[in-house]
Amino acid sequence: MQVSVETTSPIERVLNITVPAARVDEKVNTEVAKTAKTIRMDGFRKGKVPVSVVKKRYGQGIRIDAVEQIMRDAYVEAIQKEDIQPAGMPAIEPKNFAEGADLEFVVKVEVYPEVELADNAAIKVDRVLSEVTDADVDTMLETLRKQNAEWNAVEREAADGDQVTIDFVGYLGDEAFEGGAAEGHKLVLGSNTMIPGFETGILGAKAGEERSIEVTFPEDYQAENLKGKEATFKITVSEVAEQVLPELDDAFVEKFGLEEATLDALRAEVRKNMERELNQAVKAKLKTALFDGLSSINEVEVPSALVDQEVDALRKQAAQQFGGEGFDASQLPAELFQDEAKKRAKLGLLISEVIKKDDIKVDDDRVRAFLEDMAQAYQEPQQVIDFYLKNKEQLAQVQSAVLEEQVVDKLLESAQVTEVTLGYEDAIKPNAQAEEAGEEA
Image 1 (cartoon, rainbow, N blue to C red):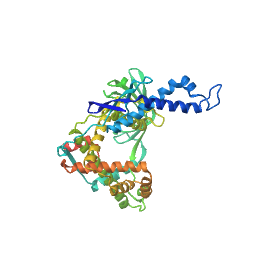
Image 2: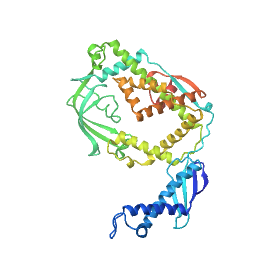
Image 3: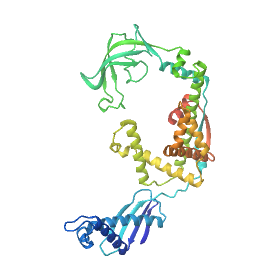
Image 4: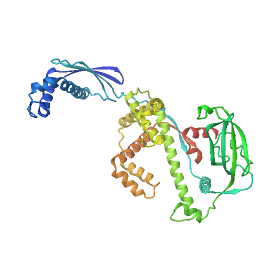
């Protein structure tokens, strides 16, 4: 077998492969003989059909199948011989497969790029410093009270923070529009869950009162037919209710199933959960910032095959999140995920190179610590740990996450780090919101 390799780009190779005719003929004859032993043909017993007869009737089809198999096998041999690392499936094109002649074919295949990492000292990141204060715990307890609040009907006018039960119909001109009506809808005034002007238009109303309010839909409203349109809503208020918060007493604490039903125990549990959430958020921000920095200082040509793999993964995630079971992920346009997929594929190449360059191996102790920390969020932590340790696929995901943490540590050794102090609420916000909060501070 002869192989010549042409480098057409940093991520593409073209292989010209020639397989001797003798190898092709041997393969074809072997397949013909196998077929003769199994085929049924009128006038002959099974397994007794002459090879010459089989070759005459089925030889062309057998030859095509044999050539396809030879090309696949020869391709594998060629990339092993030439030390080529394919990033995706090859495109194989026959040039000459005439009987009696050498088999010639061309293979185009994308390969992993050679990555030369830039100096990590060029990476600049902010490291968030934050802590859970007593005031933060108080705020969280107040949130828990609101989540467990009751609503008591009142005879007075509706005020900000009250819950109103309403029937409403929306009109564009004199015609009601689709999706603009509801009955028995419960709305907390001041929650800003409706379009601007809707909730303020109900302030001061009493149970049994009817109102007609004029509003304008935002220009970025999700329904195309309503963007920027002026509308009228006819509203009937059937009930006004005020929020009644539960007392922070033993009866309230019992709702959370703690072993010790005391306020101190609840505060301790709340603080522990908040500190876990804060720690995870801060680590996630730092990792994202470091990986963004790694990507920004390194230029890498990304094989389209790797991008396509990421597109498929993102499609499936979106389908699971929004479409539920049975939703065909392929219906989602690839363009929706193209930019994020390319970003993820590039980052994957860079992280792999960091791991390779610095010979980073998974730290088993860190894997165990990762599992123990994650398991604390469940009622039976040891069962969770045992599940992951016994499930190879799940354990591999944890090991991958730990390996990323170790890459983060390696990048931190030389990156330029600026410490930024934020309060709990700002620290747990997504990166963009947290940056705005830091600028305002």
